[in-house]
Each structure stands twice: as structure tokens, then as C-alpha cells.
Amino acid sequence: LSFLNNLIYLRAVTIAKKDIAKKFKGFKPPKFSVITMGSGGRMESFLHPDQDNGIIYLGDETKETDQYFEELSKHFTKTLDDCDIPFCKGNLMASNPLWRHSLKGWKDQLEGWTKNLSQQSMRYIEMLYDFRSVYGDPSLADELRKFLLNVLDNKYLQKFMYKNEENSDAGLNFFGNFVLEKDDEENKGLFNLKHTGTLPLVESIRLYAIKHQIEQISTQDRLEKLKDLEVFTEDEYDFFSNAHKFLSLILLRNQFERAKQNLSIKNFIDVYKLTDREARILKMYLKRIQKLKDKVRVDFSEEYF
Image 1 (cartoon, rainbow, N blue to C red):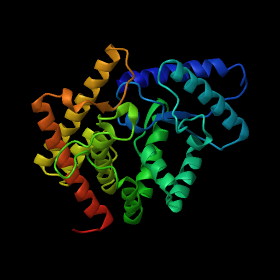
Image 2 (cartoon, one colour):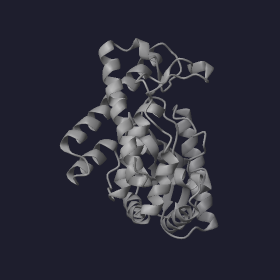
Image 3 (spheres, rainbow, N blue to C red):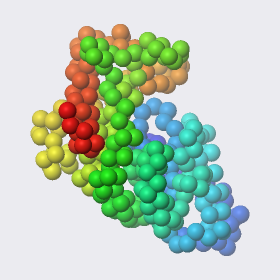
């Protein structure tokens, strides 16, 4: 799914370049890279993902250059929306000037975010960390990643990043039962498998990847590298790798079933439709993911129990 989405990105940017060529006749755009972030950057997209993208380019941030990339991003984000990769509700897109910069501009902005240490800045860094180039010169993305890894090699900053994710726990209560939605009428009685399942696992692995300066982007590749660095044992690697695959399978299967019935795609599942074996396995993985979250709390917040 992520590969197909990236092909759509590539085609959308290609079309956008042709569409705006006449308007910017005589202007030679600098080398640039369109990046996708979040689950798309990790190559872990599910059905109906929204857009999380940006632009990195060489050279100075002149008015004409920014106008070109603003026009380009407005065109390709609109094309993506037409192709059912909808606009990001949080406006984390290249059409927002916050997410399109020269390479130097990106570095300056990152340094500003790390000095700010606000909750929003931490969220931006977390989103950007999972990026990959989907169009243009990938060396720009590679250079930005090296800079980002260097900036985040800071225990104090990593502690702030952990605090921003502290409350995303696995969805089991004290008695080991699923925590079902109570407040959202549309999803009442359902289990949010993304926010209380895959997300706590992905976030935990990402924090260890940041701590150990790992360049790999996907959760599975990060897990393998963490195993090689002996951060996780062979058994821990095998367990969390399979947990990620299992949770993703259950979530994706549910989305496909809803799509076949022309229902809206969502990250909630009905746990009562799982087989007894699936429910037991899911609880087993969630329980271990919560233990991983507790380990992260110790390793990053220095709060020992």
C-alpha cells in the first residue's frame, strides 16, 4: 500500500511540474526532494491514509523560489486529494510554508524546534523523523536525516520527546481486558487498535532508534538494527516484530472488510468479532507492549519503580 501511495505521489508531482511550467517560464527550479512522513515514511500505511508531506530544496529561500514550490505543492496535494489521499487535517503538508524549506531553512527550523521544547515542537519532530524521499534528489533527505540524528543526540531532548508520548498506553485495563471506547458515540464499544495498539509500539521503537542514532525508517528495520546493537535480545526482537505484524494484519483486515461493505475506513475494531485465539494473542501482545512502555519510561524519564 505504501509503495502504491508513493507511486501516486511521484505521478502527482510530475503532473504538477508540467502544469505550472508555463507560469514559471524562464525560472530554473533548484534540486529538490518531496518527502512523505509518518506511517507513509515508515512504509506502514493502512487504507485511506491522509497526507503528511514536505519539500526540501537546495539554495536560498528567495521569494520566487518559495512561490514556485508553493504553487507546486498546492497542485500536487490537490491531485493527491483527488486520488483519495486526503488533505491532512493538521495541515502537515508542503502547501504549508512550515513544511517546505531549503536545506538550510530546514536545519534552522529544526534547531528552533529543539530549543523551543514545546509539545507542538516535539510533535513536529516526531512526525518529521519518520520521513523518506518519494520524488526528486534523495541526497537532500539523506543530509537532513544526518543533521536530524545529530540534533536529537541529546538525552535532555529525548526525555521531552518521551513526555510527549507518555500517555499512549496499550489498551488493556488493570484486569487485562480490552479498553473499549466510551465517549465517541460513533465508535462506542469498539477498540482503537491504532492508538492503543500499534502506536505505543511504533513510538517506543522510534524513541530507541533516536537514542541509538539509527537511520532506518521502518519499524521492522529499526527493530532489526536494535537487535544487532543488543538493545533488544533475539527473543525480544522476534516478539515485537511479530506483534507489529499481527496488530497490523488485524487492523488491515478490518479495514478491507469495511471497504467491501462501502463503510468508512477506521482504526477501530470490534473485538467480539475476533476468534478466541486471536483475542488471546492480541491481549498477549498488548500486555508485552505495555511492559515495553514501562521500560521506556525508566530509560527515558529516569523515573524508577
